[in-house]
Amino acid sequence: TAIAFLHFADSGVDIAVVEVGLGGRLDATNVLTPLVSVITRLSLDHTTLLGNKLRQIAYEKGGIIKPGIPVISANQEPEAMQELLTIAAERKSPITIVGKNWKYEGTAVPHQPSQQRLTITHSPASALIPSGSQFDLPLAGEHQLENGTVALAALQQVQPHFPRLTLKTMQDGIASVKWPGRLDIIHPGDEQTPMLLVDCAHNPDSAHKLRAALLHSFQYNNLWLIFGAPADKDIPQILADLLPLAHQTIVTTASHPRSATPQQLAEMSADLGFEVTAVPNMSTALTTAWQQAKPGDLICVTGSIVVAGDLLNQWESLQSQLLSYAIC
View 1 (tube, rainbow, N blue to C red):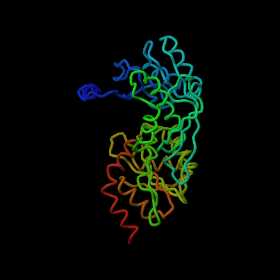
View 2: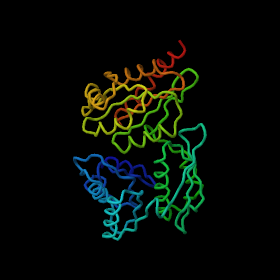
View 3: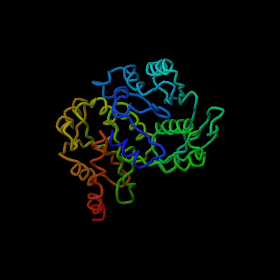
View 4: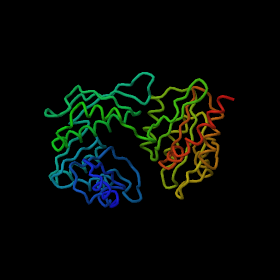
């Protein structure tokens, strides 16, 4: 964290967007006094460290709220929202809630699953972003509409520090967003090959969002699921959301000491009533799925950031080999 701060200072960045590593209250990044604190949608994760109740997690996340510093929050479950409101009130920090002070809606772009139109339907009266403003958002998933609106609300908050920030520059910025590993289409598929999608869903909430996207944002014949996850995650709950969607599931492990073994994942799947194929690594998993999938099918790689990283790191070397199968 200190090295990152030094790098930002040496580089003379205009603005640094600093993501909390874990929790917030006790995180190393919390030494900063920000222009604005931003809290996205909270869910149960890292429960052994942060607590197994949303209120406890909100307390830890609310640790980044500094006295008098504005806060932007996504809409939260009632117990989490109340905790954040209490902390903000105690510290006299004005809080803006997306879903209340800012409202939005999204429109799908036909035949482009990773593209949607974000419309701000209500914003504060003095907002740089008036109601009715539209943004082309190149990210899949309904949850990204909320994330996009949270980002816009934060930009509105810091705009006085950056007078060159305009509606047009924000529209251009949103339109150029890239987020590797988040409902990320690695290969679009064609008349000879399946589509390849990677998403680093690693807890029940993100798995639920992935499930919603697979059901509503993507069109395909059969889903081939490649799954690997850290052993300390709520794997049965994640699998319960995803396994019923899959034509076939291949479980594997990532190159990380915390990863569950393929055998462990296969046993958990069997406990849920699903038979899966266990393989030792990502390249074998992807090759197995690719050789069996047909054009019009979708291969989805998911389960953790490490698994997503495994695929992204190997895709360039695997691509020519896999595409040759379609030509043969």
